[in-house]
Length: 249
Image (cartoon, rainbow, N blue to C red; front, side, top):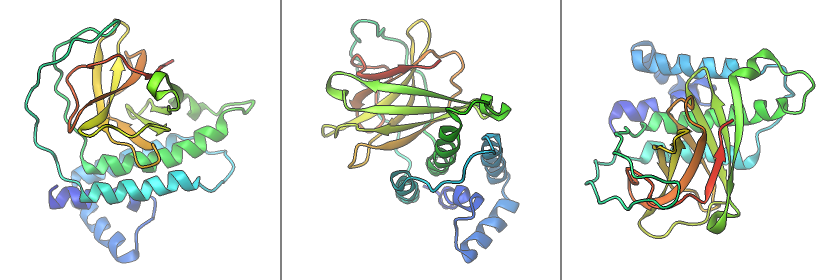
């Protein structure tokens, strides 16, 4: 990770006023002179502003708050992995069809922190809106879907929060079983024709949880699914049928 990326990883916390005064001052100076970080700040603020405002003020769940801190620390300590060598793709069974590899740049550390910060905001606000008799207009900009586990992942589930205006989504996973050595979970977006596009690669925490940022618009996709693939960067296509999946709409 470059010095600039390490500095950027605290921008989301700065937007929320979660930094110490000295560190906040340093970030403010950096943002004023960095076009990339200014765009990031604007994006985070727009996303927060898109959330329904008339919700009861509640404290964030301890589980989600802890993930914010863990993800922020992990993002600062992580390094950008080198591109893996191409491997032979195992043809998928059933509805999964082998497709050509689609280049997908892995998201920088900044987005890892931003994802859990936004998940904290959206998880609280959007969750409060559901069940109300009248939904504020801003709620139309945020959609929620569920992923359900089957088979070996029967105890796992995920909540998808789609930020339509920003063209990104967040997935809050729970109950994921530990991975075998040398494996990672890979998140897929599925088109109506059954074409899977890789959206993220991740490893859950010791409790089977993880908040994952999907840096792709969900427009044009009808399903989201998860498979276990080879570490560190997953597979160009699914090597097995998914056991955790759900419809997007």
